Length: 417
Image: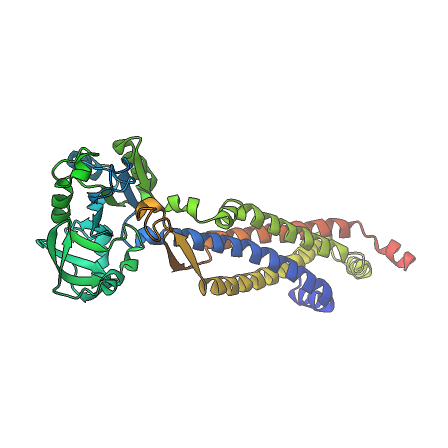
């Protein structure tokens, strides 16, 4: 195999070379682009939970409140008892659990959404501490204090040091916070210490008339799990909480991401492989179609002593060189595609049960969503797979061409010419 002859041959037939390079490059770009797009969407789907440092959100479906007065639970929540929380903590693979109390409070013809937070762990809504805009966030030992959502505080003209009433109990406002920092999961107007929210809930006739509420109960669990056991942890928690359990994982968001993501995620690999196969077929066609034009050249090489193995190595080398130029071009196109995708953002809908509001109030039926960057990346496994398939296609095309070239007899070529 002579490298200078390979370079000369590719340069002598620019149309053939360009056709082969474009075919391979497009196949590679389509395959890698689809995989990067799907990976970016999957990463975006994990964003709502990752913003609160959680891998699983667990709650239990409840009953509709008997009346919408004072403090009630939305029907997507019901009590999780203390002993059940401890069993969740003991599930293999669970690293941390943050308990919370989510509730609605109807007062003065207005809805207030509240969340009681366990401040002893960095899992769950405690991540909101990074989004404080005024004052401070809740800390262990706090009582009778509250942190408000920015928009709620602005709408009601509430400032630091003011006192607000929640279910008839006064709370001093010690801070305001940007709730979008928690990924819109368990989104609330007011954040209270867990013990204070439990006191309000346990004293509410609207809760006691519907639920078996006990001291220390909560109704939302934020769980951080060992990544290697994430799916198993979710399954174990669902089994612990029973048939009414609502267990949300990053995979749960697949159902609300829309049909475009489902198509890309489920069929992207198939479509990508089809693109690669079409590129390989085009490469084979390009290599074989030029043999007729090169019959005289091959005859000369055979006449001056080139063996079949030498001819085979030369043709395989030309095919491999052509393919690697196409692979490099395709990889460059993929990098450009990934960069363009990374300049966009996607809207990730939040399931209603993770931030419920009554359907009969303004915007109550509106589904919340967060906009996150589409962090598409080229995965090394996909690149390696493309290189392997490209090399296989190049060698196959070169061997097929060499078999045909081996049947070319110099005497017949010169007689015909």
